[in-house]
Image (cartoon, rainbow, N blue to C red; front, side, top):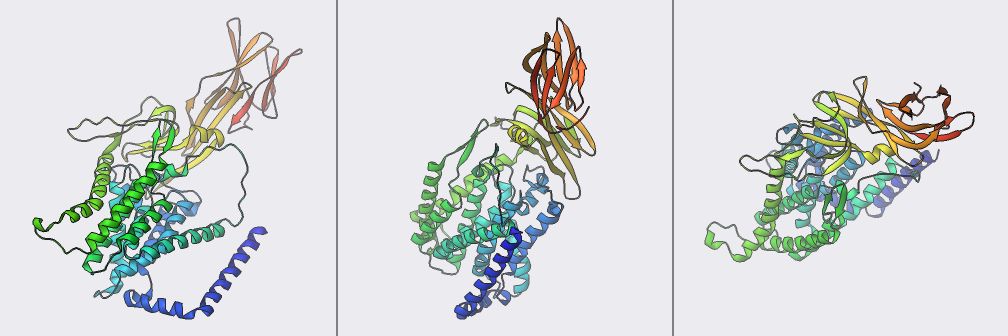
Amino acid sequence: MIEIASYVALAVSFVFLALVAYYARPSVLHEAHRLARRRLVAGLPLSTCVIVGVNLVFFTFAQRAYTGDLLTIPYFSWSYGYPTGYLTAPIGHGNVSHITGNLVAAVVFAPVAEYIIGHKPSRRPLVRALVGIPVAWYGIGVFISVLSWGPSIGFSGVVFFFFGFVVVFYPVVSVGLLVVTSALRTVVSAIRDPVTRRTAGETFTTPGWANVAVDAHALGFLLGIALAVLLARRRRFVVDGYRVGAAVLILGLAQGLSSVWTMDGSVYVLFRAAGVALVAALAVLVGYAVYVESNAEPFVRIEEFAPQRVVSVSALAVPVAVICVIGLVTGLGGVSTVDDVQKVEVGDYSVWYGENVENERVVSIPLIDVAPVNFTASGAFVTSEDRGVWHRAASQQELRSDPSRSFLVGGLTWDETVEVERVGLTTASGDRSYSVLVTAENETRSVYDSPPASAGTTVDGWNLNLSVTDGDRAVTMRRDGEERRVYIGNRMTTVENVTFELEDREVVASTDRTRAVVGRLDGARQNSIR
């Protein structure tokens, strides 16, 4: 009921604000529309509508969002041997929040970029609006995905291109648009989730800044600035380098360009101070570069290339070249075969579980021996040599917190749901034994069994250990060289005068004289009966 009331309140407030805005200052809207008609077809940002629509259609149908699940793995830019990834990465997204954040920023900044470029006075303004400009923006997205560092997905590289393009022509306006973007994201969040409830508990998540492709953002931002400078020089548009530099500093810090991070083993490390210093240096260099280049005449002879232009061109060209070269090298990577694990094959994908597994994405450059920078990780993995995929679908901690997880694998024309379950037992001392089960194509297999865990308990002379094998929970009894294995279920079982039963998910062993809690059910399938 409270959700319905929230939606009603939002709708009433939006209508009220719209009426106040129109009747208080109708001339503002009319003047904005008049200016828009001078450069846009019917005064409408048609290119923005097309590119946003393409993202939404791809997310809804190609990524199967309409099913409630989301297909993301085949749409990462994994390697040059898998061009589908590079062609789809710019319009694919990792989740609903990802696409919402990107498209909200695009809806705010892209119309301004579109206005700067303009549909008129071209000979075919409608074709330019509906095809030419959207294709150019998509091409920029493909370029960024091809030369970004490592696998990436999302429209954010193009969004940062919009940031960079707009900041050159309208630096003060771009800061205002940043505030509008933040406000609009809050409104969209209120519409998506009018009432939010969270329960305190143990969670394991990757830091938000560790999911940010800073290299792709920086590349898109610099490309937007560079192309805007070329356009400004062609149109004899005077650029205020001081204002542009200040706006770049504000935009860069507000949009996370300072999030310089790396991994040390399984630990994420954020170099916040160094990132802020880099953004500040970038702001100074960009401000100087746009001032010099926007006021310079096109050069023909090398002797006319003044020293200040060497600095200005380098300020934009060198960072772009460095990002592109590193991205080119990482794109040559492939995936080595992992042979010593149990796998479930789904199409050309392999799903498996491993602990302290070394990342097998390697860089392969002809005639050059490159030592890959590897790190170890634990969890459920999805790999594909054909696509260059090396993806951790769930970490060890995430499976411990949420022991039953599902995801999609597939391609443009097919998909398959894969379920990963962690079935375990925990001793009173906290030791664990568990199996990891993978279900795909209506078949369930165990892909990992951990070693038994000592319960540290003796009942009637029997030493008790807990184990989980192929998803079956059991207590192993050992005494004088003898061994008995008792499977745990909802039914009472008596072996060698020792009775085992479940009481509120606790495994209890008892005799006529002794009663001890051996362990506790852990993970998925807590109500299964053998």
